[in-house]
Image 1 (tube, rainbow, N blue to C red):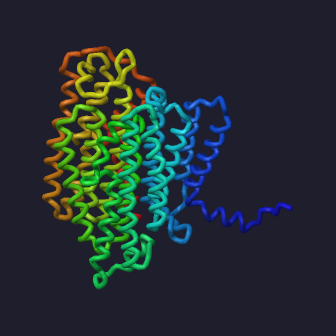
Image 2 (cartoon, one colour):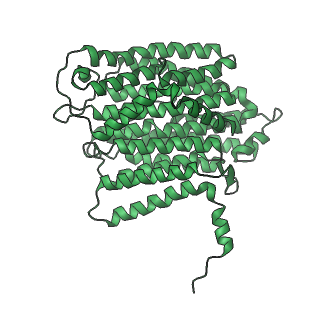
Image 3 (cartoon, one colour):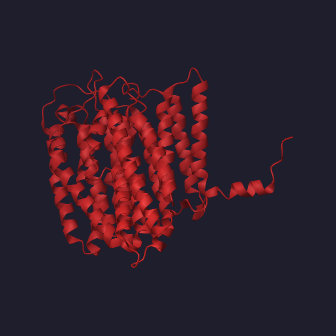
Length: 486
């Protein structure tokens, strides 16, 4: 005989309210998978549409969440910082699925598995952002990574995509090993794996060389996920080889989740050894900004160029973290929000770049004369290039302003100067694209822009241009609340 639901069962389920967004996304993904498997005449576009709705519903539930909470014996934390970063992850994932609708078939992504894997990866990122234990951190990281390994190589008849998936898998396994080794050392020298309790176990007296080694390996594993130099070696090849919608996803949501994890681990777990991890973060920041600024100069492939651009922007975001202060964490939060918006806009443009016969445009030279044939797309792409440089009054300027300000407040003048110089060097390859679009003679006709891509480009362009007078103040306030909850 089936037992009735008791009031204690209801109370127990109600206590899980802070984790409702993750539960909704997990259950919704499983149900959607079952529907796709048994619905013989399904269309991948319909599944993708339902996946977008599920992400929006999860976002709405996230916004309506109650206050801060710690669940599951301390391994899962929900605070202002986690909600802010998870909102960016969900927004990035939803927009990437939206802009990939019109080009799914040509990129070999017209399969229901694509949307399901994106949902699973997003779920892993949400777990990462709320991880309060090294074990839950690893579970979320692997859930994200295993889905992304498959997505990168989903275009099975393309040797470049297969190579991209294999490279990401091999190097991802190496980074996971480094992270686990570092976690085991941290546990061995502190006696706990809980992120908010590690700091209590570290004092000036028991700060040992073994603990520092563990921290280095742990941060190295996370640095791989944000593709910071010298753990960036997979990024250009994977970005170029993977289908463009997949590359867009790689460049947006996973970066936010890994950066959130980086901030939480350093500023919470290792707060008492800030001087030690600051040196690591400063090195990663300088190396990422410097390499990206100079390595991108010789690139002609648009996706490889965006790979080095993403490496450089990770370096700029780490400038804020290098300060080791709440102001620095606020700068990182603002930077990642603007970075996601710019990335979505850039890849919407890249997906719209096609010749009249439907062939995708892959190199900078093929954009010659775009302003004469497709002035709207050329204008939006030029605005985004100026924003990526950091020219005022565009959103990219305020993103860099926030992180440089945090560094200067802590006396990191050299780091800030290097960041400004790296921005100046990077202006060369961004302006080169603008020059080709506006001053070179067209060599072919360009295809019309799909409606959803045009809408996304227009929305992102509007936000980037009017950032200071529209979303600037609310975003900065939200980032300040998020950083203050750490």
